[in-house]
Length: 304
Ligand code: NAP
Image (cartoon, rainbow, N blue to C red; front, side):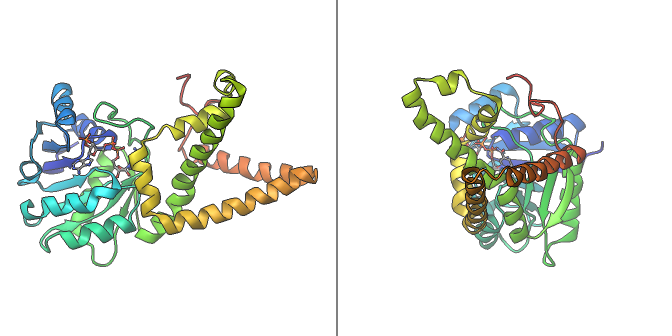
């Protein structure tokens, strides 16, 4: 595959940035990738494992002359980081991000950026429960969606180039508006994470009375919840604080459904339960048919 950008700067060197770097390298998509993270420890780790062509000690140095700057930091610091890079951006550069929430990021980043750069927000729908510079891998985005947020103000050349970059890193790309993105992601990712955190929290309380049996006999349903609930606390705190309205809307609907199931159990309404579970099973089949998971019994994640 041919080179898409001469110079890309990755700000934040965690799971997403490191996966982007390895995916770029796999196919020679960028001339030079520079990287910057807040802590010396992360920058040292990046240098040790060869993450980025050049790891910079200042954010200015990292973004200097970059054609594309990607903010790969937690949603809560996107605005501050945009303010730091703003005076050092090349005219005509594209700025993007990978934040899990879009309206909030657009609201805090846009006012910071100079008029002569193009902001094209993005969100790769790919991740694991691991974080940090050593957690990335080149295949993370393969056959996963990456959503670009565009509107009639978007610079088409910048958006189309970014789109070809994500396609070259393995993603399928679609464009969406920010509010729709935040509602859809609240259903498919944010609220399920909150439910997993809650379930594991309940089990943890119970563990104290059942003397570790919850851990010892943990069955696959609970294990899947614990995997999700092991996700990075900073990232997920920021997601809920910045996608408040959509999360509360979906949680409200969730609570209503839960009450309906609770009533069906209390009243012994087996038909209700059976119909409900038949409907949800079809959704799982749809996800497998869309190629977004395998039908291996452990959700394709292996025994680990
Ligand atoms: P991560 O592994 O925790 O890495 C975050 C990186 O950001 C770290 O290198 C951290 O540096 C750096 N950072 C934090 N504050 C900074 C600052 N003020 N200036 C410069 N660097 C800073 O995070 P991630 O999982 O890659 O997530 C990054 C973004 O992608 C988030 O916005 C998240 O919402 C989004 N996202 C995540 C997933 C997922 O499943 N993980 C999926 C899609 C999108 P230090 O190590 O030095 O603190």
